[in-house]
Image (cartoon, rainbow, N blue to C red; front, side, top):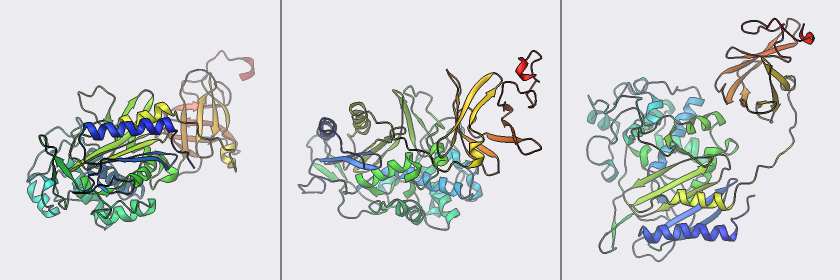
Length: 458
């Protein structure tokens, strides 16, 4: 069980939220910090949760989360990929032959690099009654991309509406029901819903001159729901942030989580290391890899952000249409700077498989030695000393194979090659040959073994 924030850190975190609420003139703000899978701090500022109310929001108060919904739509696509129902290279037309932009790939839609329009044609979908698939298809008949597909990042809400229909096709369920069955229910996120459920905030704009609250509409967004319909809470989104970085607390595999946070596209003018993966925004700063998403709908804006390595995350929700700015980033960095994450506790490994045990120890690529170790889940190949390439491998589908999960050989297959008598000879991966002794003359060394060898190798 993770401990709550230290008193000084909690005060500083509250200061971040209080300043955001006051300077942004936000009706109410709910915020929280998650660490080691637990909500270790939360706070509410502002009492205008609802018109005429005098209550502050809590970690169980629902707010509309806008585009944070996209992270969950992306998870549904990745789950379908894990089940073998689709590939990210599949084109939309495989699932929606009559749909818009049939030539776009699912990877392009997930990463906002399809080149399709930012918004669906017609009235602004966020403030208008939603339409169904047939109406969306008809509105975009003959439409062309506005940018070359795959060329660059171009945010597209329309793309996620289309992805929701792909999910419906492969699951045989509505997008909302697939989300409930495959993501929300397994994670216990009972307060993340399609429509609002009490206690919930009302969405407002704030008059720039008088400070009065102006109620914003709450339409059912229909076919565009996968882009921004959901309501959620600080507590539920703390659970979701953990699920995005900890495969032991997720519905997704470690490989899918890694794929989602791998940068796929960026704006040409980006200078801050920010990019977009598969449903997740990513940024690297100060040696940290942060992933998350912002969200806004009329009357609401929010942000969620988590440090991949420490698994410390922040959630900020508000029922103001604008004014939140970079609050979630400031909140997370405040906590990380004041309370650097402790290393995860080491625990002894148990029940090392025999086929793993024989791979452990020193291997040589040419004369360069590396050491193979087992961490209880994956093989790790690290330089014996000094700089070099560190790599990780997970068990492959075929006996005697391992697939790279990190490092230079990510995605490549490492094979244990055996002699005729069944004993282990060497390891091969992507033309690299690893031997127990440098340049083992009995192994198929590319280019042959150097003629001048130490006596021990002759």
